[in-house]
Length: 138
Image 1 (cartoon, one colour):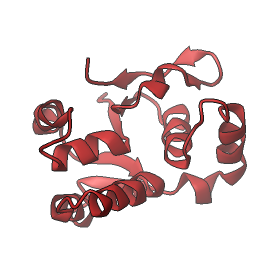
Image 2 (spheres, helix red, strand yellow; image 1 turned 180 degrees about the horizontal axis):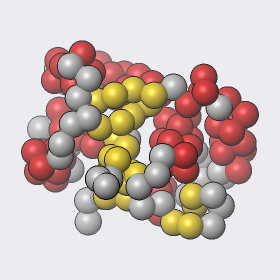
Image 3 (cartoon, one colour; image 1 turned 90 degrees about the horizontal axis):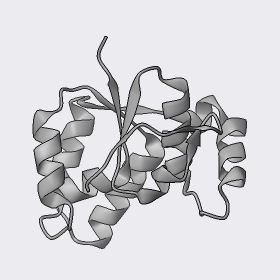
């Protein structure tokens, strides 16, 4: 059985932004991944916002979304109470809405791995006790 890759905002932005510190890592990782990948609406919105703010051409992200190579889930719609609970639990980190949605997807998707550049995923715990299985740059 193959693993499900859950994509966070950082790797998407790094893939598109040649000046990002993790660009080479993101290009290498995405070149070896098989579609479909899974993310959430909050990650897609955050990535598109950061592209616009940093004047990065978002067309590659548009293509990933349009061709469904990057599938989008709606945890905030599917489990709003669970998302709010995660935001409350990690308020001191602080946890973003995108991180809460990705963590919820990780908790509810068997054999999933989070693709992220965010070291907060080393703090977060799956089901409050198990570390998040994450693929990150060194």
